[in-house]
Length: 388
Image (cartoon, rainbow, N blue to C red; front, side):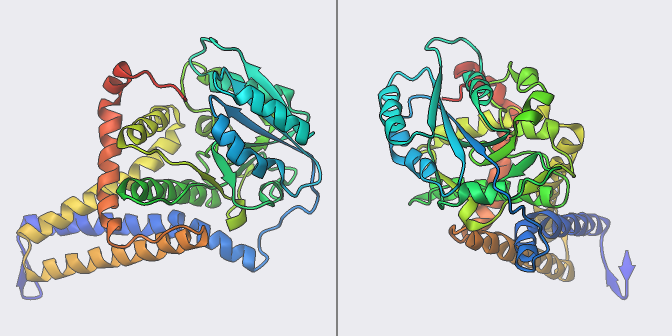
């Protein structure tokens, strides 16, 4: 085919056309969703986000299984929060370490610490859901704030930052849960993956399309939990106490996000590729239970990303010089956009930058997810999924 004196073969035009379409969706995705944290930050700076001035009582709920070391290290950061009225409920999920002794000692020092337990040998598939249900029932307050035993709040105002979002119509507040930055490629992979997922679910919630949250930093109402029958519909699953609860009950009107740097929590990352793989497997294993609208929306980004790279390669292989240059421009434009959005958000959260590793992670992580979604059930047979 000839355009303005230049001849292009059909395969060239198809490849470049697909590349351009994928680029347009990627542009939309980054500007509409991934940029949501920075956009929300700017709205706050311009006083366009209304926060509540009241500080109602809060129950912080933590489920712990053989976490005595982490509880000793991180629980005091939760207990020492600057907030007028809060309790901390730690559910000891059948621990066989020194958790019991430690919690008893801490409860003497901190009167707002309360404990309950899941008996050793409880045979529920998800003892964490059982434990959380016990903790929620024991909570004195309607506002519930969740984190994990290996999590450390960034600041002593973590509770205050999360709770300020609870207007009368708000039922969910989604926070960001980061992983500690350490040396090595695995840690960079984990922190990038966590940042990408965080920007995605926070950005979609900011765009009034919420679909998940993470139990490392999540708040909702006790009334909401029981109104939706708690974890009754997901007790047969080992995971999903956080994202499936949000996906089931959240909507565009009842969900808020909190993105201030002092509202985030930091967690210990996996130390081996094997542990990280099974952690990914555990999280992805419940994604098929999301609402159809959530699954459709979430599938578009990796599909368009894969199409973008495939069409880019095809254009370079089969295209003439003009289309090769045009493809290079689109590739560079997308890369610059990624650098700005991802690193701008990373800086806001106090995390590391990604430059040379970004294209590698951008290609590698969807392949890992695809492999897990395709073959993960075989790994389940070898190692049944447990939360701990």
